[in-house]
Length: 174
Length: 122
Image 1 (spheres, rainbow over the protein chains, first blue to last red):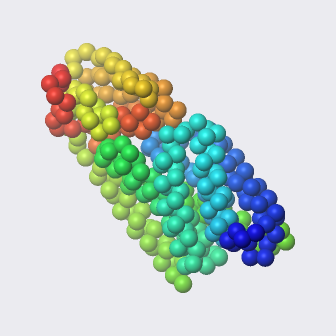
Image 2 (cartoon, helix red, strand yellow):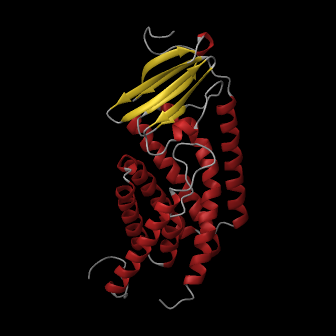
Image 3 (cartoon, rainbow over the protein chains, first blue to last red):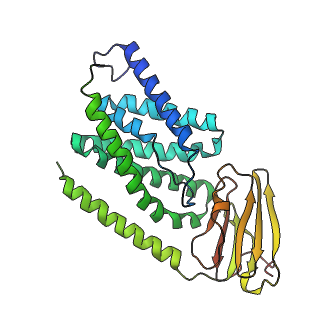
């Protein structure tokens, strides 16, 4: 197979691993939607599914992480019936992914959480930009500082989770 | 390699700035006129300081409906058929600069100094 990112790995093993992680991410995504938020801010969430994206980015390759992210966003929107939210999710996800691609080259294995925080912040920025473009409602911008402040904490939490996960996954012969 | 300490300082400063701006936005004294926007167009205005009796209105289109309750000095979305219910949980808007937003129906309520809809302010 001429798929980029195989690097000597068996394509079958790779497909299985990516599909497995996408399923894990999707499950986390759907379960997370059931958790009520303490403060009502439009567009705010924990972003727990990003643990899987960050882990795949460092444990596997950027190609795997991108595929898993795309599958999770598309299936997540169709499964939960929030097709309206697809534009926001895609814009946020894309910007988050690109930012984390850059950060991947900068951070050390003990700084994976930094990559995740940057990703969370860029996700909020992308989502907000899409919402502004689609709705033309500049009043939404009032929520951006709140979203960014919360994003630092949620990004830190999911990033630390991914960092511990990657450290342990690397010891496994998978 | 950027040191971990540098990252912590960067995020700390960013956090402080965001919290500061949030406080400014949310505590800014807003006007007394509630303007209701759909798709960025103001469709209804009401001067909250002149409301004598509470009333409810339904804003409906093909995306769904929001029931807005207006009371003397305050306004809220009390029912909506959107999936996330963020606008309902936003609660009462009385004197804050933060708008009530229903993203699925693209409905926004904000307090401003002037009525933005033509001739419907009461």
